[in-house]
Length: 155
Ligand code: DQA
Image 1 (cartoon, protein in one colour):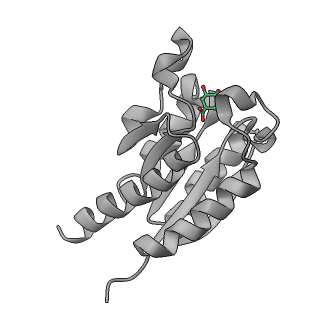
Image 2 (cartoon, rainbow, N blue to C red):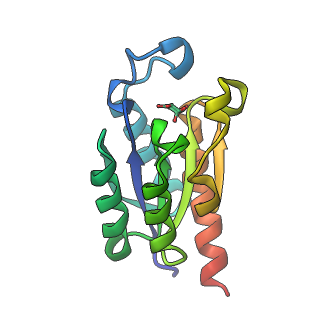
Image 3 (cartoon, helix red, strand yellow):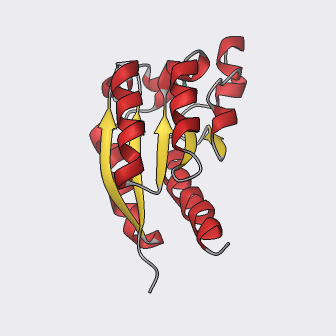
């Protein structure tokens, strides 16, 4: 049997406030609700969630990305607003690739919002981006991680 696919879930800036933060845009689920949904979905697609980490600090996210080299096959990552300007985070994602595959996810459809949100400086370092499906974006991200990691294992 194939070894389980290990996924680190990373949430960036302001996502600790989900539930009360702009519910019209981000929904009413809390971060704990979303993490519980991810943890429930993961085993159904052969994934072990190694950790769910949220930070408002760029350096903490970078350190978590570096640590994933030892613990994870993939990262499902919502960088929050760091998406739009953090070249340091993009470089961290590149630094651990291709051993660790990153899938960028967003709750909202960033392409249908303000101009600045249409640009991701991180997306080009990732296997792909999923945006606009609320908490389901994370579940799709976990499933996308499975298909990318399985494809690389069969090469
Ligand atoms: C977000 C979109 C970003 O533009 C925003 O800064 C966030 C959340 C999303 O999940 O839709 O914090 O990443």
